[in-house]
Length: 595
Image: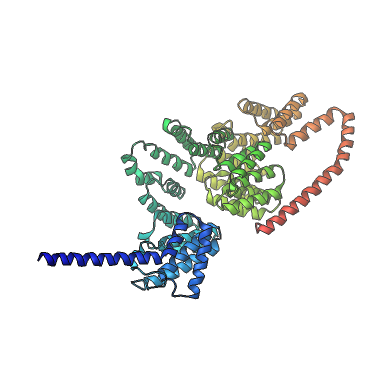
């Protein structure tokens, strides 16, 4: 019996040894595929592309050379290398070929023997690239190529239970972009179910009008189970206020978070706070927070397009030019540096160039609201109002709580004498977002265009200034109204009162205009000088100052007129140069297909 047992053990050991030898032989014969896999794992994509291309050609000329599973692996590795080279259409084609090859594998339970190797299907299945991952890569290619419908179709072909969080996240973003809000909400919720700390998914849900309390309930378990995460509920509340258009409560909530010792000087919070200040019309604090964030992170890109726009609007064009150049050195594959350069061109009155730069930014990021607004205002100033309207509407769709999107559209309506459409839009904003200083001012702006609604405009502006006495847009519109009514003393009092707490180029210039109307030329000259010190490119302040100088000195006026006549030819030359430059940029727009 003992001998019999010994013989059985020996027989088993011999069989096991034979299996090991077979496996080793198989591994040696599969060495080519192993090497390609190792190259891919090492990130040597250019090497993978060359060797996989050669091996695939060998397989085409001799179909028996590689098994179906080996050919599938080669196709996937080859497609990955092409994807890394940013040839997305070619990569999508190769990934689809790999999926077709995968269907051949699924039809057979075991891999056919080949001249390069032989092993069981179970062993090779462990090394095969995931079919789901291949489909995700195809969808990624289609998304980059802006073939969103094709990307959605590919991802919807993956069964719901097999969808990973990143697949659901991509689907949610695609659904939201396509306007399929219900499907987007479902996908975002699935991401949160699997990953409760997916904060971008939380922002996505809040942007789709899902209530903050419902979103917070989906993260409650992780908040309660992990220490030092109590701030997350407050963070969700802040973003709920932002997407609900309640900017003041959003500011208060973010400030309470920012003051906490654990979250103090967080760059993302500072950028968010700066953006909300901007939405609320508080330019001074918005710039302050952007600068604070920039000091903490010199390589910051997010939000810098808004910061550049504010700086350009305030007349700091040299600083904007420096900022744009610095961001281009960080990355020229983001929309922000292109938008900043576009803002510099726009406020330098180079509208064709601003249009080109805005279009380039949209090409890099079709969801860039600031790029859409830049292109919209450039088109409007070039007289292409209907095209501008399309861009402002798209910006409104992406950011329904940003009032500057509505203001741009209203300005287009007014520019094309569409007062009725402008009034309808202003009333809709007023009813949707409530009676705050900004919505009241927007409605008053439209009322000022109609002689029949001047009194209503005055009432609305008084209400806006009662809420926020320092709101510059409301002050400017009220001053314009007082100027029409020739109530110069009231206008001077209003502007002086506002300028005690803040300094603004437009306010100083308007005060200068009012002072000229009451014959106080010396102080008017001082106000124009202050305005020009704040914005050296403010043409209206310069014109006001030159007009006063001519009125004060008739002799000098004659000399200046002669000088102006002499400079006229130079100005015409500049204008011709600007036209040729406009033509040059227009050609580039056609080249890139951006018109």
